Amino acid sequence: MADQFDLECRNVGKNFDRFVAVDNVSLTIPKGSFFSILGPSGCGKTTLLRMLAGFQEPTSGDILIKGKSVLGVPPNRRPVNMVFQHLALFPMMNVADNVAYGLRRRGVDKATINRKVAETLARVGLPDSGPKQISQLSGGQKQRIAIARCLVLEPAVLLLDEPLGALDLKLREHMKVELKQLQHEIGTTFVYITHDQSEALVMSDQVAVMNAGKFEQVGTPQDLYYNPQTAFVASFVGESNRWRGTVGETTGDYVAINLDKGGVILADKAAHASLPTGQDVEIFVRPEAIAIGRSDAAPDPVPGNNSLTGTVENVLFNGAASSVQIRETATGHEMSVALPQTGAFANLRAGDVINLAWHASQTRCFAGVLPSGIEGGQS
Image 1 (cartoon, one colour):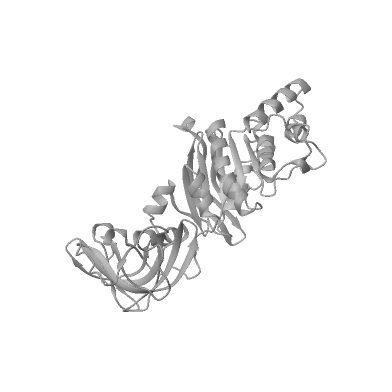
Image 2: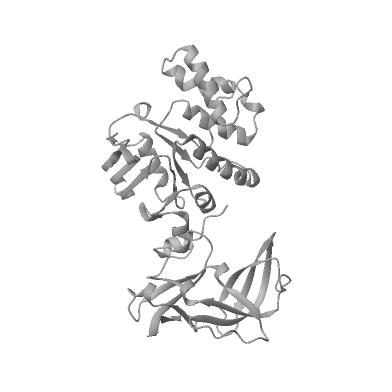
């Protein structure tokens, strides 16, 4: 089985005196995949990346690359390479010399260096850029050269430490697509560190969501978004309407959740069977799961539907879609609805009264109370 994975962590931990930065994490990363570690600042993701690179040694556990333990192996002898956030290109060298730097340090002969540099620049889509100075490159081209400098050494795993963080928004959006396409074309395993959930969701085959040194959930972007397993994942990955409440009575296929500020929300009984009556819960509903209707029309009597009435407080225009901020009439709860800029409700205005509805299957509840201030990553 070991040859199926380029990288494995087995119960890896890292302590700094009494502070636990990484707490007993395990993962397996298949060959040729794009794997992201997503989490807020201070969650331990950079410490984990530094242990993978060999810049720090774990306090406990084991790290395997291509099935072999690399504990005690220095960074320059591990089959990995790293792209840093600020790229660390040498401004006094041209592009070809930047890419060739690692090969020269290894004592590779000139003919081989020239061949490998040319091949690698072609792989990253910049075949004629060798003579150029770094100052002549765009931000996206610099990203590609930084990756080429790593790929020319033929690592089993390429580690990327928030490499898009220094780019402006438009270029960052473009580079998400570029990086994903590049990884697919070259087939090298990428391990990508980010606090930006948009980057992780767009580019990754799998994502590990990290919080306080641990993995909360590991899965595909679709798994994390549609089937979060913890309140932290539901809150951090994507946008959600969020309330607090208590598990109430069960009727048929649905369980009633009594909100702290008044009112009741229905949730799917089967999905929340482990929550006992009286359990305090965090409640999440995605903005795009909520449908709206005219206030003068009675909602369709669909079993399991949550039906509320609210007043539009603000419409935040964002091109093809808007975020509609609504205050629910009966309890004063604030809500957000994602609304495409088409159809009968494209011209909502503050003060409009509307009906809101979503099915119980779109309600997600988790035991306990999540600390305030946990927000989804921003792009």
